[in-house]
Length: 116
Image 1 (tube, rainbow, N blue to C red):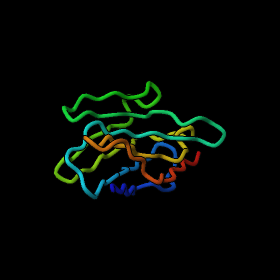
Image 2 (tube, rainbow, N blue to C red):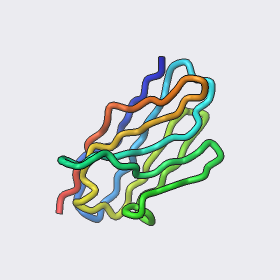
Image 3 (spheres, rainbow, N blue to C red):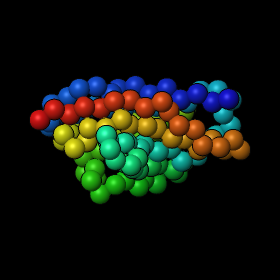
């Protein structure tokens, strides 16, 4: 069984920064692709960014240039550095990880609120 623990969410003013973390623990052979998603009230969950084990990054147009995804494989942790935050970035942010030979796991979510 794999557990994901997210941290770093909170309330910030527009233009500010936050750094989200998501650490995976349990029986883990290797972590393949790691993801961050978000879901705003009344909207569908959307992909924010992903990073493969090789470091290939994909990010949504709406966050490109402001958000940076990274990972530390020694800690089985993925990060999302969020700069120049906007009110429209307000959402619950979820991490998802692909555990080799096991499957996909979702974190419980962390609230990010950006005030104008």
